[in-house]
Image (cartoon, helix red, strand yellow):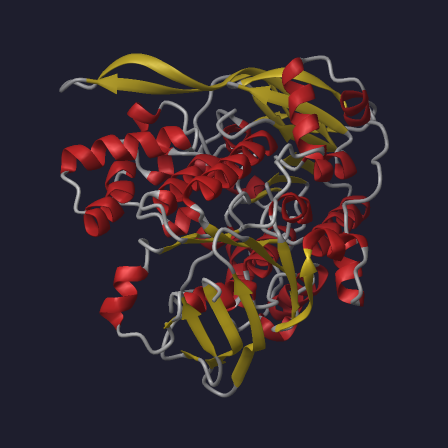
Length: 539
C-alpha cells in the first residue's frame, strides 16, 4: 500500500457566474521514502492538487466533485477537522511557495517555528527554544541565535524560505509537500537545501511530493515524475526515462524551454540613465534601554555603478548580499549616503514632492508578487493605479485600453482584468506585477527576481518580452537574480555582490567565461551543475 494515494481527483472553484475546473480527474501515488515530482506550467493545477491533500483550499468555494485521497490508508477528503488538525504539520508538512505571505508578520521567527513543536510534540518552552535553534542551524540560516527574535520582514527572501523549511521539518513528517521549495534561494543554497532534504529523507524514510518548475531540480531529486497541464496529468514515469524519452508534446516543450540567446557586449557610449558613486546603506544596530547605536549592518558598502539606456545590468549574489537593498536605494525607497544620478540629475537630495514626477520614469518589479499586490484590488485596479497617480490614459476607456495592452504584452488575457490576485497562479501574479510597472512606459526598471516564480516556458517568454520592450523603448534595466541562466541570457554587464560590496564586475560573457574570484566560480558551478546526489528507488 502506498503512503499517499490520489484517485480520480477533481477540484472545482465556484465563482459567482461560472465554475472553474482546476483539476480534472488526476491519479497518482507516493510510496514511503520516495520522491515524486509534479511539474507543469503555472495554472496547471499542481499547487491546487497538493493543497487538496490537507484540505487547505478555500472551502466552500472549492469542492471535490469526485475522487479520493488516502494517506496511509486513511481517507482525508471526508476526515473531520480535528483529525486533519492532528495530521497537518505532524505527519504531513508543507513548504509553501511564497514565504513572506505564509509567515505571520507579527510573530518572531522563534515563535513561529516553535509553535508546531509546542502543538504536536508537547515540548516545554525551553526544549522548544533549543530545538528551534537546532532547526535554524540545520537549514543554514546565518546567525541563527540572533535571528530568533527577528520578524519575517527583517529577513531576505531566501532566509524566509529557510525558516519555512525549518518549520516543515520540525516534527519529522512522514510526507513533506514541497511547493517550489527553492524558488527564493540562490543557486549555492539551492544545492545545500536539496542535499539537506535528501539527507533528512533517508534518515527518517520521509516521502516528498516535489512541486516545481525547475526541471534541473526534478532530474536530480525525483524518483518518478508526473507532468501536468490544464488540470490533467499527460505523462508519467521514472524521471530519467521521462527526461531521455519524453512522449507527450507538452513534456517535450517543457524540456526544451531554457533561457536562450546572448546579449550584445555593453555599449559604453550609450547615455547614462541611472548612476551612483560610493553608495552606502548602513542599518544601525541598537542596544539597551536608550537604544544606543553599537554598530552597523553594512548592507551596501561603497558601490559605484552606471546603468545605460538600452542596456541591462545584472546583479547576482547570495541571499543577504545586498542586491535588493541596492535597487531600493537607487529608487530612493531607502535612505542612503552617496550621490544618485537619474538622467544626469542628482536626486538623493530631492524632496518627496520634487521626486514624484520622476517616479513614473523609475519602476520596480518585486520578488514576491503576492505580497506586493493588494488583495482588495482587481488586476485592472492594480495596473491602473499608476495611471491614475500620474494622470495618464485620459478617460476610463483610455485607461482600460492601456491596461488591456499591458496585460496582453505579458501574456495575460485582458478579460481577466476583473479578477483578484488570489484567483491567479503564482506565475500569473508575477506577470501582473510586470504589467503594473510597464504600463507607465518607464526609462529605468529594477527587476528584483522577476522570473523566480515562473515556470521555464514562461521564463523564456518573459525574457523575450523584456528584450522587446527594451529595444522598443530603449529601457535601462537593473536585473537582480539568483538564476544565472536568466542573467546570462539578458544582461549586457554583470556585477557580483557579497556582503554588501562588489567583488567582481565586467561584461557578462567575460565574467561567465573567465571568472576572477572563487566566489563567482562557485556561483556559476552551482547554477549549471547542481551537486545533488541522484535519487535511488526506495526499498
